[in-house]
Image 1 (cartoon, helix red, strand yellow):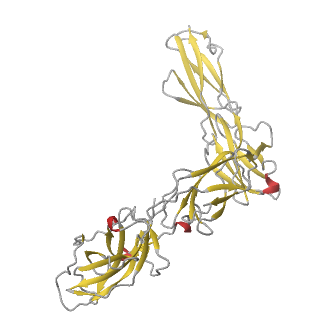
Image 2 (spheres, helix red, strand yellow; image 1 turned 90 degrees about the horizontal axis):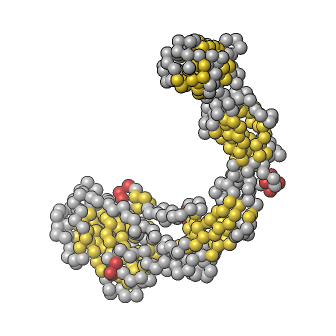
Image 3 (spheres, one colour; image 1 turned 180 degrees about the horizontal axis):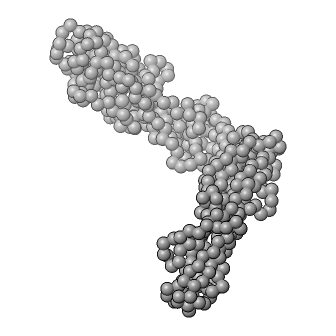
Length: 462
């Protein structure tokens, strides 16, 4: 993928009639205005180079976009003018190709030099002028561009001083990589990422008056790095993606026109760096504040000190929420949490080192039974008793603290709620209207309004 010309933002203006390869000058359409030399000259969305020894290198497989802002001395007259461009090989100044397009004064007038007129590897010079009312301005400064439609022939090599391939490496430190073009002087830099496809090299943004704003890929060190010299190398310090296990860095070389080589890769393995998570008591109670101690993975603190932890709760009333905890000087930390998952709860904890390393996740989990206990002498659970019209009593007692009521339903009938007594239990009387299999479903509610897990009590009426 080359920069700029393959992804175009084409400026469309009413009244623009397109390109011609003719040599005639447009007839006069008005008087009393003088054409001015085009300014803000760009080729391939990059500023033109007026240094013949340092031409801009561009991909032009579908033609080369050139543009400038034509104008006249009358800023109030927006009548169309002609933007005229001429291009020639530096080695043959007499071989001139001219293209013209109608344009609005003060707006970039983009034209495309045909690909058939451009030879890969050749350096060209081009100029622009404004034609208005039968009069032409002086030609602009000369811009120089080298056509580069050929991608680098070799893929880069990748090495790392601290994360070797095919072995498990201790985690905690950024990976130090050396990318090398191995002397291929067509290479000026590298693109890299932890995933595929690699990011698109990019295009220019378009500003006021259609003026391109070139986006230099190497201004984004997250994905791009210049080589220290043509065909040279670049060194990177990258924090691998979170977690232990296999990691792969994908890399390709870029030439001066941002043509890309084939992609190569470097895979390595990161050892576990998960912190430990230890509750203050072996079996924390449901709904009770519990203190947890967090500690770095063995060996991590001495090489890459931990500065903080991210604690995420899974299964509780604040499912998925995270808490940031600052570590002490020894890398440990304490956090107090109230566990309120009605079926159980889990904690997922990652540590962050001062160098930006994020560990894989340490985990702790516990299960809870928050269903009520149901007892009936007349209608035993999973048994038979009583009969049609025979009343029975059902007693509900909690397995957790702070229960204030119970809500129940028999065979899917509308729910009813009974208030718990001082001992947090409650009883109901129920008389069956039919024999056979029945299902009593009941759940408790706490004083905070939390609905606990439901329980199904099955029995048979004689």
